[in-house]
Amino acid sequence: MKNIASFFKLTTAISLLMTIAFISNSQTNPPKTKEQAKPLQQVTAFTGQVSGWTNNDDYIVNGLYLQTSSTKFLINFPAHMGVELTTTIKTGNTITVNGVEKTTLQGAKEIKLVSITANGTTINETPVVKPAKPVTEEFLNGNGKISEIQKDKQGKVKGYILDNKTILRISPNVAQQLNTLAIAGIAISYSGTKQALHTGEVAVAGYTIIRCKTITVNGKQYLTK
Image (cartoon, rainbow, N blue to C red):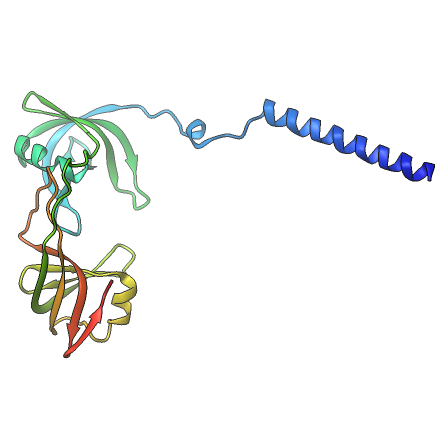
């Protein structure tokens, strides 16, 4: 019995020492956080000419191309800055972009935007400000022919572009189930809510974006959300 009691005492003492050592090590060597691991990024001024604009899948302006003496850079900016930037800057203008240079996995050159100076005006990148009053979205019904199947960068269907300048937004999961029915050239009917432009956004084409609720193909209606 004495041997058993001594064994338990020894085991307890070892466990206590290991616990103290673990706590001490945790305090002296705290785990690295993402903030600590992030390298310092130097902001540089890049001067060149605006050679064009980019837009997202909803045809809303969200970037521009800067051609310097040696390199063509893509500068992405929040869509809500579209009105301010397209009003101040025109294609061919010489501007200075303050930002951090980076290279994408595909080898393209980009600049993480801090500010843009053009025609004596400096425009800083600003976060989205939520509107005081929510945007009212209109519910619509319509019909048209699918002229193009719109896909994302991973090749998944994200919408249908119709011949009446409408884009139907639909989830990839639903689109996959409709892939033999909703094809280019076929006539459909639809219902859903119209996506409104938010403050500051600029659309480069007159498309109506519909977040689709139902779609009717070959006389059969399907719920899409």
